[in-house]
Image (cartoon, rainbow over all chains, first blue to last red):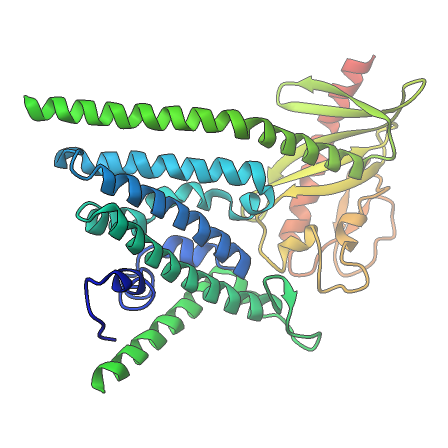
Length: 204
Length: 196
């Protein structure tokens, strides 16, 4: 998938396929595996992560010339943790159902490598506009994976997608799909598929 | 020297801004979060007790009893309380309603659990039983818990203090019953000590 690098469109699009945070960089696997037992959980999780990623990227690229290199990681973590707390409290106050469903995984966004990784690799070296585009693309890529993974697991594990019944009474849900092994199976197959497509693309 | 000043100033400023933002946010969210908690608690209490007009709280250490009363003479209709104990994987928290005679349960609701999806989670709801998905929790309504609740397998309960286990989740079923058996006597002691 060769596209012109360093254009503004590329900064957004690379997050979806070429540099997809989960499929290619294999970052953020903890939330990817843990919360995708339903499509809705995957979506809420990626929205929460996206909010933290966008806000932190904006602030950090604005401050990139002010933060001394020696304490950059400490500063990033404080900024990221602030936004994670904002999301956590906000969900608890305004969407208690999601907040309960995602439990400890919202506070754990602090240690999501996608966020710290993007700050170190991108926002610390680029202007706020580009950093926002980059974060937006990464969020889309992350959301796509979580929703697809959650959708597949929910469909096979409960017969529903976004809680809407898809498969009828004849279907006996594969309980294993909403248990941890289902996450590993599905993610493994998805990554294999992505690699297969990339390989075919490279040969052409 | 100069760099260390910069480090000091940067970290201080970032922390002050972060703290300020979070405390402002907390002012907005805290009352709402508390409200949700109270609403969830009230919903759980009214689910396990028969109709009541108001409730009084009795606290002793970590245990709080919610005594449901009826107007106008304050007749006690039941006592609700939260019990917490070990399940198959993690903690199970149960809201349980006790009839005033302290012999029977008036209601039972699992508030929090991390049991195995599809097996242990049947202590909350059993989607595989289309006629009565709530058959397990409903067994506790009107159940005699003295001298102790016993768990039986694969047959319908015939005695007043028997509960049928979930097949495939015997440990979860037994965990729930053992939480009740081990903690209900203490609840009675607390209640009797405070009321008389």
